Structure formats: structure tokens, C-alpha cells
Amino acid sequence: ELKVEQNPLFLSMQEGKNYTIYCNYSTTSDRLYWYRQDPGKSLESLFVLLSNGAVKQEGRLMASLDTKARLSTLHITAAVHDLSATYFCAVDPASTSGSRLTFGEGTQLTVNP
Amino acid sequence: DTGVSQDPRHKITKRGQNVTFRCDPISEHNRLYWYRQTLGQGPEFLTYFQNEAQLEKSRLLSDRFSAERPKGSFSTLEIQRTEQGDSAMYLCASSLAGRRANTEAFFGQGTRLTVV
Image (cartoon, rainbow over all chains, first blue to last red; front, side, top):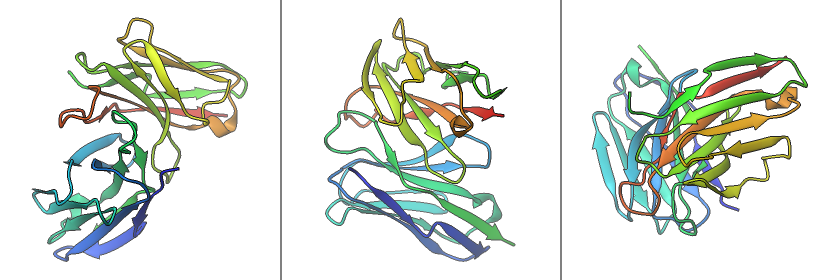
């Protein structure tokens, strides 16, 4: 059974600081997604990582994928309050042919002024 | 609005009642997924359709749950004899089939079910 683990689960950081969220998964996959969720809202797609070594950046967020290590990272640069949300990574196993995703538990990020 | 649409957004029901939720996917998407999310957890896969065929069901989907996608467009998720443990956000997502770059899943706003 595929397991997806995120750490940390809770992250409180000050504005302007940098930090990295880690996502480890237990089976072969070359497709990993990062989503953002605000309280009471649905999931907003942030990044789609489709191959080993993939790196994508959008604003203050940068995501990378190392399929050999079965690890993805979401790096936050110079955090601002608007980034406060819960971030999920989700893995699409290589054994399936579509987007049947297994999600991590989420990292609840709070950015303090 | 061309995104995934879910109805209702909120539902409060008494234990033992039946409820039905609807999902309208992005029009050109042939895959439709249902997930359940409880407080503080990531979404958990329930079932998915390709066109009108239900291709996979999670063991989370007890016999009180049934999903349909009769014409390969919208889908319904019915929960019979609801229990308090069914209280959750029910999320629908849609995508194109396959493993190409454009088969990302897009999520609807969800239906929040509260069983009292």
C-alpha cells in the first residue's frame, strides 16, 4: 500500500524566513502534485512534477522531485502571511494510469508577522 | 464557470437519513473521482469513473455508499443510513485519462456533510 508522509505537519514561521516542507512516498512514482488548501475550501493545484529532477517555481514557492529518493520538497522563500494555508503533496502511483491520488496528511503553515 | 461544480455545498442531516451529492466535472474530462476528507487529514480516495464505468472502489466505500455516472457526465454520490462517522468534506475531481502531462486532477469546492 502506498504511503505518503509529510513533515513537518505543523509549521509556524515568521515573515521573511525560508523553510522547506518534505514529502516522502513509499512506492515508485514519477508524478507528484502539490496542492494548497485554505480553511473550509477545496484544493488548489500548485505544482505538477512529472519526472525525476523536475523543479518548478511560482512566486515564493519552489517544488522539486527526486524519484530515486522518493522525495519531493516544497521550499518557501521569504514567507509572507498570505502563504498561510495547509499544503498537501499527492502521489500518482506508477501502477495506475491516471490521477488516482494518495495524499499526505498535510502541512499546516502559519506565517506570523 | 468551467471548473468542477459540486452541489450542495453544505448538508446537515439526521443520523439514519439518506443523502445525495452531485458533481459536474469539467466538460471535456472523461475521468471523475470522489474523495473524502475529514478534519485535519488529507483527502482519501473513494471511487472513480472513466466515462460511465466505475473502475475502482476503495475499501472505505461501504455498502451504504453508492456512486453513479449514468451518462458519463455528472456524477452522484449517495450515502444511505448516514452515521455520525460519515461527517466529512466530500470532494469531487475530474481529469483526462492517461499519464500525459495534461491529466492533472482539478477539484471542486466540496460538499461538507454534517450528520447530527
